[in-house]
Each structure stands twice: as C-alpha cells, then as structure tokens.
Image 1: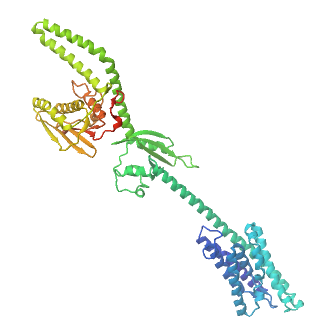
Image 2 (image 1 turned 90 degrees about the vertical axis):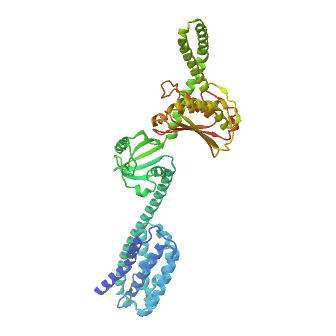
Image 3 (image 1 turned 45 degrees about the vertical axis):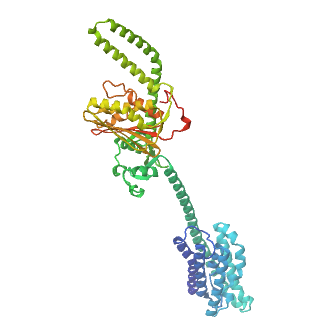
Length: 576
C-alpha cells in the first residue's frame, strides 16, 4: 500500500510539473502573446509543447504497475492540458510526439502499448472540446480535464478484460487501485488547471499592460510632437523646479546661449542653473506661485526679444497639491515693434489732422502780419530795423514749421522719374560743402561706380539728403568728417550718411523717428520723421546705427524695382 501511495504521489508531481514549468517559462518569456501562434513562431505554444511532452514521457516512464498488471499513469493530464490550451497544430504535434515516445517506452519496459497509450483513444474527442474548454469557466475546465482522466483510468482497467488477459475474480482487487488512481487523477487535474489558469491570467494581464503601455507611449509621442510643433516656447518643471521636458522651440531659443546643448543634458537640471541664462527675479517668483497652485502671466524682456509668459500649475489626478509647473513663452517682439510703429502712425495721423486744420487758419494771418511789418519797417527809423528783422525771422521760422507739417503729412501725389542718385548728391554737394566749411568740417564722398538708376522724386531725395547731412554736421564738432557713400546690395541701392560725432544713446535710438522728439534746443523733432516718410514713399527703409563716442550712421535702402501696383503712390496722412 505504501508503495502504491508513493508511486501515486510521484505521478501527481510528474503531471503537475508541466503546469509549473509553463508558469515559470512564460513568466520569463514573451509577454505579448497569450495564445501564441503556430508551434515555432508562437513562443507560448512552443513553451506549452516543451512543458507537456516531457511530463507525458516521465509519467509513462515511471508509471506504477499493480501486482495484477493494472498501470498507474497520469500522463493523460499533461496530454489533455496541452491539447486543450494549445492550438490545433500544437495539439496534433504534441499527440504525435507523445505517441511515438510512449511506443518506445512501452517497448523498453516490456508493457503492451495499449496499457500505456489508452489516452490517445480519446484524442479525437479532445479536439472536439477544445473550443468549449477555452471559452468555459474555471470549473468547466476542471470538470472536463477530470472527465478525460476518469475515462482514461476506466479504459486502462477495462482493457485486460476486453482482451481476455485477466480473470474477473482475479481483477476484483484492482478496483480499489482504479478508484485510488481516479481520485488522485482528479486532484492532480484540479491542481494543474489552477496553475495553468494563474499562468494564463498573468499572461493576459501582461498583455493588457503591454497594450496600455504601448498606447501610452504612442499618445505621449504624439503629445511631444504637438509640443515641438507649437510656435510657443514651452518648458515643464517638477515640484523641485527641475526641468522635466523642453519643446523644440524652447530648446532652439536656449541654444542662443549654449549652442551645443542637447535635451537629455537639460532634463533634471534646475531651471536657475542653466548656463548663461539669466532669469529675471519676477520669473522665479511666479514659478514659486505656480507650484503653490496660482496661475499668472507677465511680460519678460530678454534683449533683444520680448516674451509674453504664462506660469501654470500642473496637478495629478489624485493629488491636490501641484506636482509641477508649465512655463510658456510667446515671442511678441514683432508684435511690440508693430505696436510701436502703430503709435508712430497714430501720431503722424494726428500731425496730418493738425496740419490740415491750421494751414489756412495760421498761414493767411501770418502773411498779412508779415506784409504790414514790411510796410511799417519802411516808415520806421533805421534804429528799429533789427526789431523788425527779428520779428520777421520768427514769422518765417513759424511758416517753415507749418511747411514741415505739410511735407510730413499732407495728401499729395508723389511724382517720380528715372534718375541717378549720384546726380542728386553731386547737385547738392556745393551747398553741403559751404555749410561744412562754415563749421570747420569736411565731407567725403564714396560713390560706388555703376550704381543702378532708380525711380525717385529728386526734390524729396534732396530734402532727405539735406536733412540727414545737416543732422550729422550738427552732431559733430570742428574737424569732424561727414561721409556720404553709396553701393549696391542684391536688389537694393544703399545710401549711407555717417558722421564722427558723439553718438546717440541706445535709449534715444528707439525714439529718433517719432514726430516732435528732438534732442536739440531749437529743433522741432520733425526732420527725421520727414526723412522716414520720404523713404517709405519710395518703398525703402531707413535705419540708424550709433555708438556713443564713435559717431552715427544712417542707412537708406531703396529698391531697384518698384512694384507697379504702387505707382503712382498717394501719400495719406494716416498711412505715413
């Protein structure tokens, strides 16, 4: 009896070993496929085959045979499990391999294959129940496996009687052995099915986690691409103000300070530790507020650019306290420039309205006053002549200011003709030389050969050159040098007027072309505004470069070919 018990325990262990090895191997194998594919491509199918076949062979090799010839073999359990959990090809391959192995083992131990391989008689019925088994509940699977175990045990008990190999009265003692084998077989079946069920649940869970992770990575990659394509500079920080991510726009902006930096080098570093990236104190304050849950926005000036920044807290779903912050930077430099230019246009519009309103109201009375002053001067003694001269000069000065208003802002048709810029400069140079000689200064002309003729208004270009030159002379002391040069650059002809004066402070450069802005004691602040208006009417641009102590240079760029749809151009006070 002890021998039978020991052999039964051994058979149970050999049958259960298939499920144990399957659980171990799938845990370290492929995590993506639960039911696998074919025998070789499907990793889990191959594992199932390799776990069940040795268990069948071992159960057959170490089977216990009672004194009356009845074998105790639980190989039916790994065989049924392999067929039920596998696919059709796996089942057929497993059955064929097991059948060949059992024939060899039966011949080696001197036992009839009919005793050892009774389970293969049930093989066609197993194939019919595969779909029911895989769709059934855990209890259904246990009962089905147990049913095939019971059927195999009964076939092993009945075969000696059917073949007349044993007397019925002698066979009676093996009934207890058969019942014992059935009991151990059912228990082993339940244990194997439980182990296989747990293994496949783990595989299914890993499959779901793998799919979820894959979807998460895909969505995260899409989000990262969207962030990189955004025109906004964006950086995310954790609760310790360390960089979590920085989009492509922000990275390119920071590369102005550190050209060779890469994103992995920045991730994990505090924002305040970035190389040569001076963060204004208000930014640190607003980041701290964002980490406390307060959203805010501000304008940040990082010369030469201006940014509109948003500081937003980040929250996790189950955490009330912010876990990080998002900083967005929108480059509004062009918008600020446009806003400044719009202010200039509004001021010019106001100038035009003022000029149009006061022209007839002031010039006519001034003309009458000047005429009567001339009559009074003729009838007054010579001792009062200098008084009349001063009054008339001031009237002329006031009339000149009105003319400047009209030149700057009134509506008129600008008539242009094809002419050479050098001819205008040479025609005006005697007047400029005379003015320079009175100041003790010199003029240098550096005119490039073969400069293209342009479509210009000679009168306005003379006024432009005269204003720029006199501004340069007034900015220089004696022995100063005024340089007037021309050259071609791609589709433009450039006119440069450079002086050797004291230069203009950076703060004043931004306001030079604003009407009424002047640094002269007797200036009206309209000269450079008039110059800008003239250049714009000629579809060009005017810029200024100045270094304190080294002089100032005005650069006028005139396009060689003027768009035909702008000719003739009507200058409107609101536009200019």
